[in-house]
Amino acid sequence: MAGNYDYDLFVIGAGSGGVRAARLTALGGKRVAIAEEFRVGGTCVVRGCVPKKFMVMASEVSHALEIAEGYGWSFEGTKFDWPTFLEAKDVEIARLSGIYAANLGKAGVDLIHGRAVLKDAHTVEIVGKDQTITAEKILIATGGRPWKPENLPGIEHAITSEEAFHLPELPKRILIAGGGYIAVEFAGIFAGLGVETTLIYRGPNILRGFDDDVRAHLAGEIEKRGIKVILGCQHTRLEKTETGIVNHLGNGMSLETDVVMFATGRVPHVRDLGLEAAGVELNDAGAVKVDTLSKTTADNIWAIGDVTDRMNLTPVAIREAVAFHETVYRNNPQHFDYEAVATAVFSQPPVGVVGLSESEARHACPGEVDVYVTRFRPMKYAFTGSDERVLMKLVVDGESQKVVGVHIVGPEAPEMIQLAAIAVKAGLTKAQWDATCAVHPTMAEELVTLKEKQSPTTSAG
Image 1 (cartoon, rainbow, N blue to C red):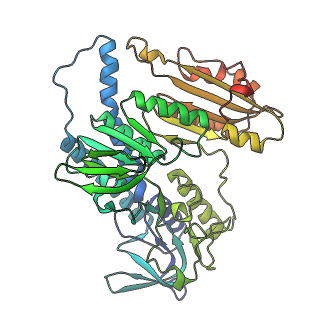
Image 2 (image 1 turned 90 degrees about the horizontal axis):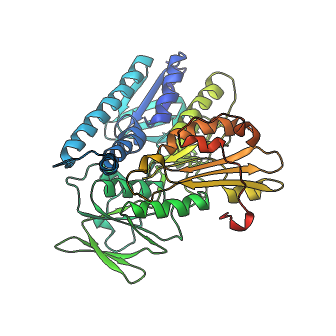
Image 3 (image 1 turned 180 degrees about the vertical axis):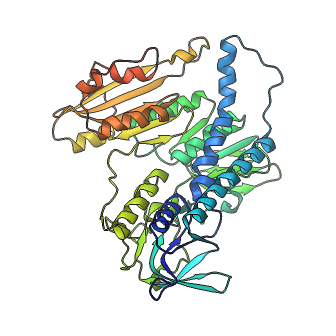
């Protein structure tokens, strides 16, 4: 017994962050339990990053075949079978979820399948199992869930990203509402699989919050892949017909598709969690309110990951989990550093970003900002006649000459940005980038050979 409690730590939510915190704490000799209402692995493993990346890779094959023909390959009778892919994807996701569960067991964590609800600051109830558990400390790691406008007439006919992973058949036509990374990624997925794809977004351009050059460049590039992009527009209603779903739009347009998917953001998963009973407050955005050490407004309860709506990335949740463990159980108070965290958008072409956009740098840097930009056709497309272009952009603090932002749109951008992030995090200067010898012939060599600064008058930022 942990004093008068059943456990030293009880974790609600077995996603990447919750699992890491539970395992570390159990390996440190504490009694730990973790509850999961769906499947171990959370959003990322089960209905997020991992299955989505499999879908991206499957959909990229059609583009690879087009490139291959330019190199002299020929193909007959190529086709894609959606059920075959779904089965292979589900088998792999089940395997990964099983590994997560097995690792919890090996660490000595008690895994409870069920929805945990807080009854007070030290007590949780497992819904429907007539089971009540007490714990000295509690960690909330319930993640986020897709949001859609429930007051939109006909919204019951629309799906979210969660249903997109399990469509019984591949539609011929799809409309995706949203302009964030999930919307853009699924647009590329469905278009690559041969679906007639339309993307609508209420804002002036996709990927709000990203560098303006990145946003404009990607919007043009995804249209080259056959995606119809409609900006400054949103639904007024959805109408189910015998042949599909009619999308009635605010600009007077209406178009019929087989599936309508809303990728209009995610919200912290706090509904019916019993937070009020435990003295856990929410912030103005509806996320669990935490301090810099991830402690909530209840002295013995912490929260990490998307439920806190700080930086909603799987690796960040894992690092927050490590910081929680160090702070609470190793007497080593620490918090995750949210500056210069690299991120990727697995659009087609993909995006890799670390650090400040040009606009952010002009507000954050004390003096001038130097911008280096290049756009070019990748060597891979030399024989294909494709007019697709890569964008690479360096944002430099003019005073310190540190590279404070790197932005890439093009093949393998996510792989490149991981390594570029090391240099940005380390605070290396443009001169140190330039002193690095290029690897030729590669796309990445452009990052260390950019010499001419962009004129401020032509800047998008």
